[in-house]
Image 1 (cartoon, each protein chain N blue to C red):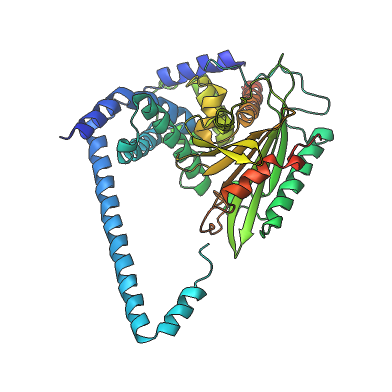
Image 2 (cartoon, chains in turn blue, red):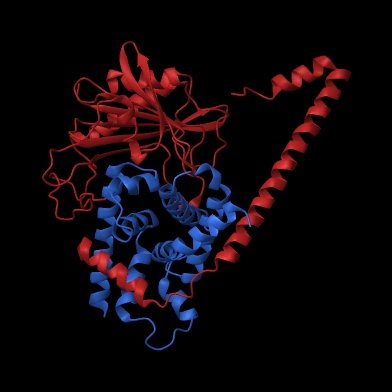
Length: 165
Length: 281
């Protein structure tokens, strides 16, 4: 095995779980999340020689992952309109999906993808406005407005669901 | 729910959702290697295709030099620690529900910027059509659009940011011109390349300083995938910052991209120092 392959494997073992968590919050499905992670790491592997600093690996992989998610949403390859439908198909074991988590995932699924990406990067990845802007390729001001709108949307959806329940 | 509640909720969701077993690094490497093999094969194929076309053209030229010249001409021109940005408690100016101004004097400045950008593009021979995204996933959105928004946070001096996106068309090919203008901000760098690297968080951009009639402009380019290819950043003497960015295509628009970036570096830099983009003057 080449040095590059060994280093890639080591990096994958260390970081794929964290990236998969981010992907899961973006798409709401673990299988789809793993597809996104695989795509992101494959692109990383192809670009491995161009990325010479270790700290840049995370940034690159996360950027590819988020942009792949947004791009597939635009192209319609990936449909994630209702978390509840997906979960019903998967025949969850009793008690496997706590109600609170269902409520948040259902609401998150209804937040527009770019706003959702802003929320996940800002409040799950704990990235700064500038870092989020770099990942999404937008201005810091746009990150702030998208995150604020996303949070507002989420808050509205959660209060709606609360009323229904 | 506030920002902290959301952080906690995200943690809970991921932790309690029974993630599947960790992904297999061997399998990930195997998939990546196969992707590399496929890419190499396609690159070899492309080289072969170029050679075949070259041989074909060479033969055609030998048989009919004038005809080959016509063919070539006929092909057309080749031409952390951050502030809590989502501050939901921020008091918006009168008439606003969020950061963006939809009406009033700030929104009017956004429109003023859009018109100024169109004018600059048209002066260089481009059309600036009102095109729609062809992909229905964009909900029939407009490629030509502008935005005025507050970019500062609660408790900071108010900073407004105006951004206009203009599709630039020539010979049915469409590129993109973006101009983003900010009112004076304490955080904006004075050194041209430091200023350019503040644009859209692209802190690792390549940059050189360009001189435009004695004015120092940051001439930057990003090598990141899917990113604007080049931009110019200039801080006017009154503190307003102008960023002018371009790319040969319009991402997601669904139109053929220009063969090269729409404007030369010199033209783009001239736009960055153009006083008409300093909207308050």
